[in-house]
Length: 318
Image (tube, rainbow, N blue to C red; front, side, top):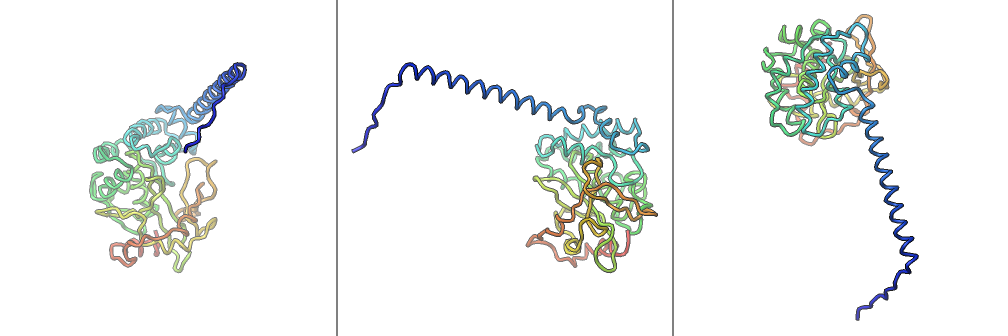
């Protein structure tokens, strides 16, 4: 037999106190919600004004005086804002990531080109209708090398720093070494709102040494890496250097780094060995990511001939 709980009437004075307590609780929750909204508002407005001029000013403040070309800064910001609109539907690009990995027009110390307008006009149609950053990136990457930017581009070692600027040098000549190709690819992805950055190592921690630069692309909530070279299909996180990278040493010239636009965010320095004497740039240390990286079971054989030219060029020089 089911037991029936006895019900008791709540005294009138207790009911009054109960109602009063509920009203007080609602008041506290309401004030808390207002406070949270105010905090959120402060967080939103703590960055630059998201107008072209505000973005240009934000970037200029974080660059050497010699790089502050007002017309180029403003035009870059205008086209970066257009790029932001192309990828905003994915919900994958935070304001912070946009500022640091889409807005900047320079990756390392390459000569400054006004590359955004042309890249945007040529590549934006390719990402229309793509639902994720990964889909957008996979539509753009093969095109960058097969003539989609006006000229086919191939890998040619030992051309840094002679060929680094994406338009006036790499596209004009039709070739570059790993540094120039990485700059070209990362800029192309940024031109359509896909966060991308050049990553590299100044000296491999092996004999005979050598060095390399490649590209990291943000999608699916993580950074993914790809070598900058002609491909028909993108093979993410699968390159010839995954085993070599495990020998990298953080905080040394044998570490893996990506340069940052805001010096306040740097935790290390990336040595640009192609300059004489070498130059150091503020950077984030990415060594731990690569030394701890686990290959996929389906990874291609490291001796795949399509990798040989990049591996041999990297281990010899830039």
